[in-house]
Length: 531
Image (cartoon, rainbow, N blue to C red; front, side):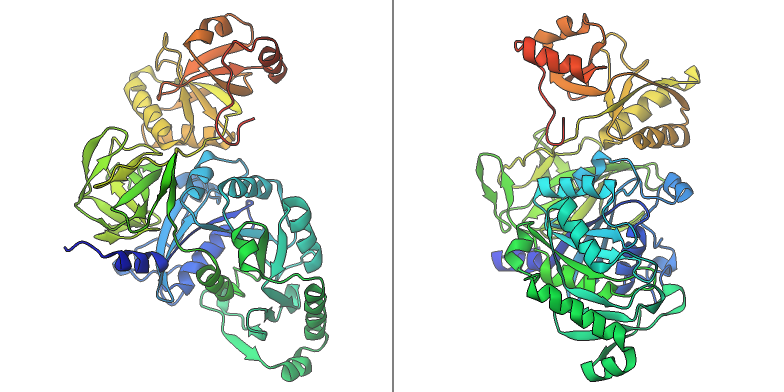
């Protein structure tokens, strides 16, 4: 295959839209994800029926057994589908109540985010946490106020909530006509049209839309239409209008109203993803100019996931293409080892399903199956060496000692703990004097422990018991401070697999006192998001 031209690479990159969906639990993220697939043609004529592999593909992004049992998203997934001559790479993030580092890693691969809010609840605690991650990543956000066909807060009240709690100025690009059972449709601010929706059975097919001219809308919808027009006029009077520059800068958020369950407003939102969110751009490189899109191939690994396919017990490393053209079978350099890496088993993902992928362009997500030496944060490249900035991590706040309950399964326990560490499900901390006998699992949210124990038992056959510790805060330290810290009460020093030493403290007040009184001790906060 001939080398791609600069124009070809830039054209293909322009067609890509790579974004994440974030939300508080139960706001409707998984439903919206499925409806995006429906409108993108990735599902058949009905939601839940898929046009591929004889209809065997799963329409849901929640593939893990524990997710299906609990009805929540625990791990992130990657879904790719076409829409309007564009290629959509949708990154579905965990939506459980406990924040997970997996979310941060996925957002590192996204160019934009869709924030889903429950119309009856507005901004919730998890929403705030996720927004902070987006702000750290400087990711522009589209907001979708979901469940408008149910009892809800007033639309202006929801806009105030967004502005007061997130510091984002909301700029509605659709406005609801009616609410709850009287939800008729929306005023499309981009076209000036009133778009009326028609319900379908269980929302299984795309909602028929009718553009209704103003005089007819007044006659048929009466006060519902008039009230919506008045509210839009009020918003225009205070200057609440869309501005591309402030949206891309993360100052404003375009807002859409709808109902993912009934498909009301889904097309308008998906159109906005294509029209408003940025295409891939040159990725920053520490102490160097950004890597141009048309430079030779490069990519960075943001996720590792094992056992997505139970029949193969495999391990997949997901990377985002940052520059050039990726071709299956090409030999790339694995930056962290300096060794060549074959890419024969390259796939594109659709939840648990995957298909062989021959070519990918900037913005696309590629899964390398059984690339066992590849870790989260690694860079892959050809021709020109490049090393992208590491993906920031959050400081763990919960710590538990893990022990296998059946000593005959210790080999499986050790293998499973290593695998979960590599995937970033939990951070695994070890005492060099003890090794893997009783490692400490460290997590940002308690549910990470539930995921770890479930997977150790069900995937590795190693049931474990966890003993929660009193440690609540961690700091990076070094050999010079290790022994003195370990001699203190309420302090321990353990080591991550990458060699980093972490000092664990039971009391944040004792930590603060040490930082103030003993500046010679190394006690550094962990990267972004740490306390």
